[in-house]
Image 1 (cartoon, chains in turn brown, blue):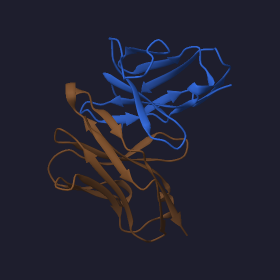
Image 2 (tube, one colour):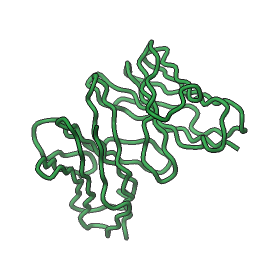
Image 3 (tube, helix red, strand yellow):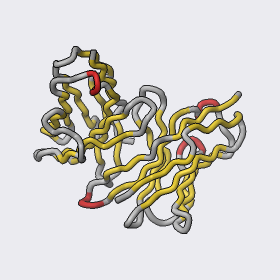
Length: 115
Length: 114
């Protein structure tokens, strides 16, 4: 079974500062890992994903994440925060059994940007 | 990316009534669709996996007779909340699985049961 732990339910950073959202996973098989963003009253939008290959993954809106197997981590970063980055962020791991990509989500991190 | 729509986006109903939520993949065929529910300020919890033309597979603890799922075509899945009660009030989100097994999420449906 897979699980995801997101450290910090709320993170606040100043505009222009580094964004770091933490995600650790547990998986019995090589994982597929995802970061999604959710704006108020909206569905989820995929920021980036790791499947195989390069461990540093670049996504949309300037975000990137690095898969570190030794640390079972997949932290999300962005060098310079923008006001529009304020949202809820979810890390997820995929269960690839039976060809269905069932996703297990973390509890989410609410990112607040301070002007 | 591929687009998934949900209808309605917001529904208010009286306790005891049934509500149907539609999930459509607009520009791709989704053999598999997933239904999630999300309580305020919480994460998404998978309710069920539906495959076109077959019965849905429900997650543990989800009442299949209360949450009826129909996946009649490759572009449409419906979730019917039967005899809704206030505790069923939640944000319901569907996703369609694309050719490469990636999931595309709908915008969600907010259900409020009075």
